[in-house]
Image (cartoon, rainbow, N blue to C red; front, side, top):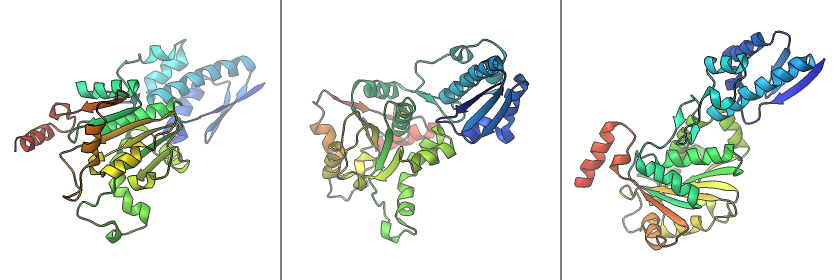
Length: 312
């Protein structure tokens, strides 16, 4: 008799096992001679050596499929369990896909400038992505960061926004500091929830592999081994942008996103994003990608609304 243990590293066990462990039951049916005990992030396998080895090979294929696609269908499961099938034969790779969301849906560029953002990220360590709302700047930036973390290219993701009060003061909002700031960070949480299972995301935030904080909290830090994203950068002042950009440490990628048509700063305060794109544009190791209404990937009406405001 042989015994092996497999760790579901970086996988949410609830998602992997299925509702009421339905996926585990399907796997057991293919290997009736194997005793399998699934508890938390660990699967224990007991049986004859040859059968345990064969089972372990299949389970690793299932695990790798789940790690890549964030999901596995019954058809994919049966193909892996029932025959000598390699991972790439189950679902061929798409060169444009960044990663797969929690439903298994591919996240990939949907416009020329979105593709330009991905290319710029690959070529340079600092990228400015500037353009109107709905063009996918932040969403794609977070997808690139999640992919880098999953591939162990970096140790953490750091997401930040200026906490500019659009008509409200933080002190008058209810709750502790986190509860006051969370509404400003909600768009970042929404994107992460599309890409990482809820339980796993909660653990990654607790372990500080993913950090979400207002821009003011960046002061004094050196941000190394990370993908760092500053969202809504049009609402950062010149000194804040300078402070943020100079936090860059070893093995880090910086992505700065913003929309210069939606500046919420006081009227006499200059936007740090506009200033930075002007004074840094000739530095060859920094990329600039400019989006327009043709890149809008939200409801079709959003393009028309943006176009109407631009004409006005």
